[in-house]
Length: 288
Ligand code: NAP
Image (tube, rainbow, N blue to C red):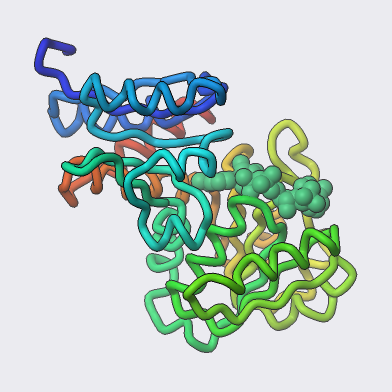
């Protein structure tokens, strides 16, 4: 129940109607019996600075940030985490005494299912990442956090691949990253311990598409972990091909839920987030 004491959280984006975050976060807040509500906040790009000042005035506790504000919000915040700096995008903001503090929970969201799947050491592992967009940046930072030895990024546009490679060079982090055109795949695939799709290929309604063909999937070793950031359909064609070969397959819903869990931990300063409830409400909404 919303009362005079209810505290506010939300998500800013434009548009924001399709965001799954209000559903997922309100389910968790209700389960935890907290006097909080999480709101969709549509903010047009030209209103962003005014809106950020306004959100501080109304005492919002924190908020998520989605397209198109993930980069443009950065100069409007008092401080950002090293993670957000390395990814180059903020998706979670919390109110601190000295102003808004921004971070990026996509990295924790990406890593969490991998740590559950493989609790060992990653220092000998090689990752292959398909695509070089915004999500790929969080995946690269996640691979660095896991201690993965070598990262191969594969894309279809050579000049964008070169820009992606150069974008890591001025950061105070060490990254062993190589970029490759799609034509190199047959040579690289047999080396992968982890294969991640960060392209939208295979996303609903194009459910019969896959970034790799069945023949290309056959080039992977059987113990390769295959991860698709897409969460509808579930599984994607890409993950179905991996499952057909008996490989471990991780879907994008796990990442979506875990980035939300990480945001709630920051806002509420608690670790006991009801992750099952968040997953249940999303599965019901997306697939029932
Ligand atoms: P983005 O910035 O637009 O990047 C998309 C990347 O995919 C670009 O490198 C693009 O290359 C490449 N690409 C697009 N179509 C392609 C094709 N037909 N063949 C080969 N490469 C292609 O998007 P994003 O924000 O990174 O998101 C990517 C995907 O991740 C989306 O499906 C999104 O829903 C998902 N995602 C999931 C989560 C989660 O929590 N599960 C979080 C973030 C994102 P070009 O520039 O050459 O087109």
